[in-house]
Amino acid sequence: MKIVSMKRDAVKRLSSKLIASVLFLGMTTSIATALADNIHIYEIYEGSDIVEVRTFSTDPTDILADAGYDPDDYEILSESTALHGSELIGLRIGKKFPVTVYDDEEMRTLETASKTIGQLFLQQGIAISAFDIVSPSVTNLVTPGTEIHITRVNNAVVTEQTTIPLTVEKQYNDQVSYGITHILKAGSTGILESTYDITYHSGVETARQLLSQEVIKEGTPQVIEIGTAGAIVTEEGDVRPYSEVVNVLATAYSTEGWTSKHTFTGTRAQVGTVAVDPNIIPLGSELYITSLDGEEWVYGLAVAEDTGSLIQGNRIDLFFDTQDECVNFGVSDALVYILK
Image (cartoon, rainbow, N blue to C red; front, side, top):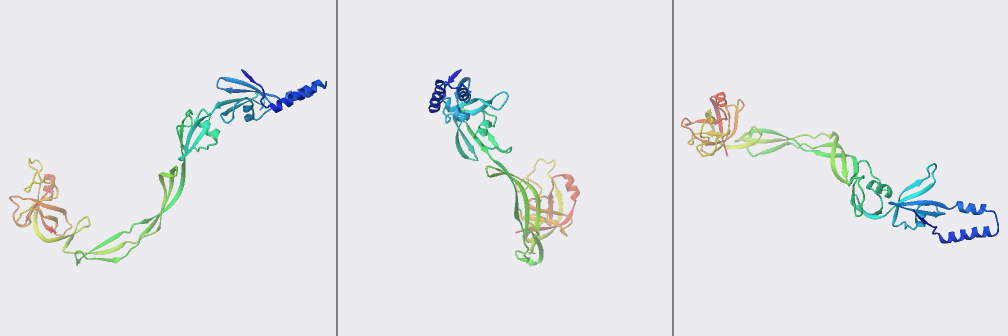
């Protein structure tokens, strides 16, 4: 153990002279004892080294300086007290080294002797919530040059208003020419109010949870009139103009079990492929096919891509995937709209 004398020269010289004077004058030793009682003995631990210091000081920083350690270069890691009482008897110290802390991307270079990141935070007064993200972990050891990143995690309840898009109701009028549209009712948008619990990492939104929604303003639909004279309205609601309507007898066919799956035009037969008499319906024509009333059944959009020896005149053959579907369809009168 190394013993260090007091380093407060002025105080030491004054004290020693006073003690010498008292003893020289033959006064009672109680005064000298009182002065001696003001001298404190502490042990300073740095790693495995122990230094004993005798000093009048009771402040840990002053004790450190009296022991010959520059407080700018050394950090007090812990304090030891007497077994029975709160009297300070020792200090454990460490030599400081630099580390870098990025707190929400704000960089700070700190001098520390802390063993772990958690101890560094305590020593530097850096507060961390249970939700903040620290990398490396607070239990990791600190070494010279360590870089520590703190991502501050915050939550906020936020209410937002968004526009409910305008809805459109279509009214088809076959007395109005195709391509003519009238707005019968302007309509209006609505307002939707949504409340979210939003999570922010370093001020940047990373997640949101919907808590509640309320329509605070109901919208009204826009009503438009669409002319369909000379056009057909498909099941999807599209208005397609046509050049001609042909009344035909429709049958069905399938290539199930056939070696060849290709049509007369070289395409692969599939649902939407129709065999026609090219003298009545030109090959390559885009078609829309329904029952006579347009409601009993709808084959829909199709292309004239195939022919057949029995498909002569006003007859068509509709492709289905299976023979069973063909049997179920049977034979039916149909309307073929040759689309423009």
